[in-house]
Every structure is written in structure tokens, then in C-alpha cells.
Length: 492
Image (cartoon, rainbow, N blue to C red; front, top):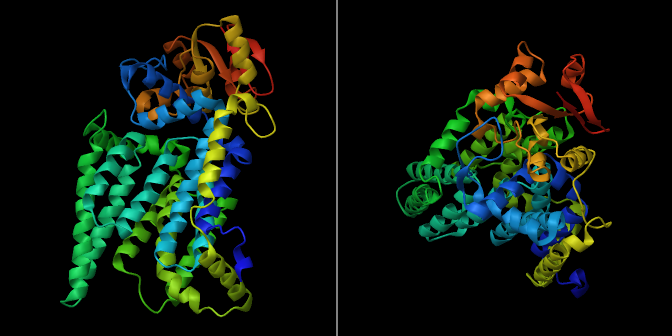
């Protein structure tokens, strides 16, 4: 049976290898070109590297005053990767992050004695649901932090370890609040289980875990204040989540569309979970029920939370469903399970992942040499970003206050650093007034021309088929300065 795993590769290593290879070589186009946020983060990272996170806004002419980035460590990391090897290095960094995230999930399940094939299949399902949000943005660091948090929450015994985790996490991405909510849900659920248990060892065990997770949450709150904004970071997150106008106009906060392929896959996963819960003779432990309810509600409320639902819930449910899974007597399934079990028994965990990580590092550092080749991205996609329009505008020294297509804002900061934009994904920082003005102009609502005058806009860069472009050309004061298949530049 030694031939069952000739490579002696653990499924943890295989999970890491698959994604560390697939993201930079196969999925890099979407990873780098999904929207303009990634180039904005690189630009802001360079901004922080030059002068720190406390500076005056130099990005948008629609906003003046102090600037303080809340994701500065993520932005610095992306900027340093970009310095080292351009877009290739950023894609490789993404592959390493994604590989680590889902390898840690599989490792969590194996450590919990989940049957290897179930652990691997659960990791793949979580990755499929997560892939929709695999883009070069700070939330990937939240995905990684959640995977680490799950290990600490399930197997940890030292509550103070949550301090360093949340201190780092809060400087990478605001998603640390999900980690705090997860610890609170576990603590409350364990307290309820203790109340439901008869006096004795079971009650004491549940109370011990409840105290552990409650202390972890408390330490996490205090540690998260170790950031450039201090306690103000929590207040800012609260303001954003309480801003109904911002949430209603941001696509990522809209509810899931179950008519789309991704929504259908998520719906199938939810229905499978509900079916298993219905057939399961025992109820889930209350902590797991609370985590499931919280994460499922988040996924249904906003589609950006669906990958987090898979990341948090699926491995915990795999642990709970493992016994029922092993009891299934399906011949083909039994053969597959036997192969995975024998292979994992013969595996040497950690044998292959370090080598592939080293190869990824070499590939990343060779990024600027490989750029433009068949295996490495050399530039942003000219079909999605106004690459040629910006190149020509910079060469000509085109100047004046700009109105830009929303999703191009971050790219313009990156590719046209001499120009200050009208708007980009920092809508919470720029304010509702700027977002309302942008929407009024884009939709040609009453008073749209006055908004252009109010901000003294002299240059407009939008897609050629934008209604605004046609409306401006009906006025004698505007003319086409450049046009290609992706963008049109109009000037007064």
C-alpha cells in the first residue's frame, strides 16, 4: 500500500500547492484587475512608506484635510511586493496568502480528527465560495487572520495570544471586528451550554471555554486599539456600518443574487447544511449554532460576506458532521475515502509546501524580468482600465480638475500620479456629499451640469458609451480629446 502516496504529500501541502500555483499563473487576471482598489492600495502604500499614515489628503480634489489610512500595513505590504517584482510579485503574494488560508483550514480539520477526504472536500468547497473575493485587497489578510483565529479558538489554551493577533489584524484590515464577534458568539454559546448542562464536569468544561473566549474577546478589543487611530478606529467602523446611504449604494453590501452561478452554488451549500442538520439525530452545540446563524445571516445580508461564511462555518460543521460522514456506506465513496486515509497515513506533512513557497519567492522576485511573458502579468488589462488614455494624457501633460468613472479612480491614482481624482473606492473617507455628486452626474439627474461646475471639472474620463459622454458632446463647451475602445477623455 506504500504506492498509495508515492509523493508522501499531505493534503495540507497539496492544498497550499494548488492555490500558490493557480492564483499567479491562472487566476491573476481577475486577481489584479477586478476593480481599481488594488492599484489605489499600492499607491497609498507608497504614500505611507514615504511619509507615514498621518498626512494631508493628496488624492482627490473633492476632499481636503488630514488623511489617515486604516489599512496601512496591508497597503505597505502590497507596495513592497510591487516594488520587489511588479504585478507578478503581487500575484505571487496573493497565491501564498490563499494557499496558507485554505491549508490552515484543512489542517484545522485534520487536527480535529476529521476524515481526510471530508477535510479536503470541505477545504475545496470553502475555496470555491471564497474565490469570488480573491482580489488583491486588504481583506485577504482578514481571511488569513480568521484561519489563525480558528486554530486559537478551537485548540488554544493561552487567552493572551489573542492580543498579538488582534493588534496586527487591526492594522491590516477592519475585518478584525468579525473576529471579535466570533469570539463573543463562542463565549455566549458556551455559557448557554453550561447553563443547560447538569452540574459536574460538563458544566465546568463549558464554563472554562466560555471564560477563555470571553477573555480573548476582551483582550482583542484592547489590542485592536493599538493602531494609528486608536479607539477611533472602532468608532469609524461603527459609523460606516451605520451609514445606510453608503451601504445602499455600495455593490458589495448588496444582498446575494441567487440567480447568478455563484449564488446558486452558495444556495446548494446552504441547502446541504440544512438537510444534514434536519437528519442529524443530535442538535449542534449552541456555540456552533450561534456561529452558523451569525455567519449565514451575514452572507444573506451582503454578498461580500459569503466567502467569510464558508471560511468560518464549513470547517466547524465538518468536525460536527464527521461521525455521520464516516457512517455512510457508499461503495465508490468508501474507495475514495480509503485512498485518502492511506495516503494521509503515509504522508510527510510539510515536505513539499516549503519548496513551493521558495519557488514562489523566486518567481515573485523575477517578476519584472518575466512581466509580459506567458506566465506573468506585465500590466493592467487595457480592456478594463484606461491604459492608453492615461498614457497619452500624461505624455501631453493634460491638466485640470478631473471627473472619473468610479471603478477607475484607484487606477488613475496609480497610473496618473500627477492628477487628483474625483472619486474612488474610499467613499467612506471622501464622504456622502462627494458620492451623491458623483451619482447625480453619472445618472444625469437634475443639476448634474452644476455639479461639474461646482467642482470646476475641466476633464472627464469615462467609458465611450457612458450617457455622460453623449450629454457633454451636445454642449458646445466640451470636445473629445481622446477616444479608444475602453475610455473617452473630454475636455472643456
